[in-house]
Image 1 (cartoon, helix red, strand yellow):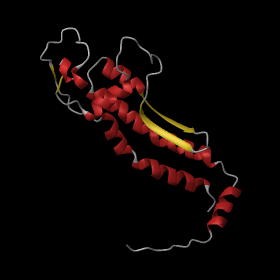
Image 2: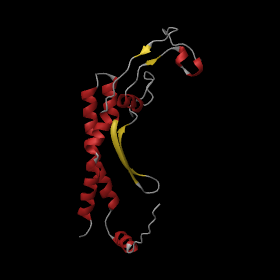
Image 3: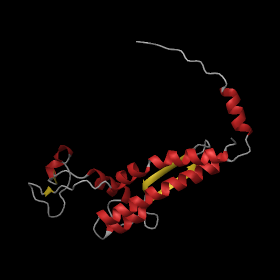
Image 4: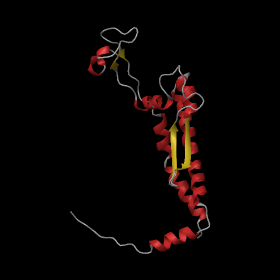
Length: 172
């Protein structure tokens, strides 16, 4: 196995120069990330509108799509885009599945499966109403990648925008 040794000099001077700048890079990075994630979230919403039928899958799913840019407790800028818990009705008792979990099922699809009592681990558990002894074959659902397709299409702009925005504020 080949080994190598690399020595870098001058990094302390570069870090000192960056620390001496009177520029608020945090605000610039947050604004750049917001500018980059907005079209990705909008594309996810557009995909959901075009891929899903009416009802819960469409309305609540679209309302649950968004992004977040913030600072963690260490001062590190974090950003995420995707499907979040719907804030207006997080504990809706009529729904047994929340939007992020439903989004996962849509993204990955569902394979045909048995709903038989014996299909559960160890064959234990109570039978659901209307479930016969042999079980009902649950149908499959083809994947509908509304989140990943939007992210992959727009993710390259994140670093392009970040690079351009930081180059605009740094002195030449």
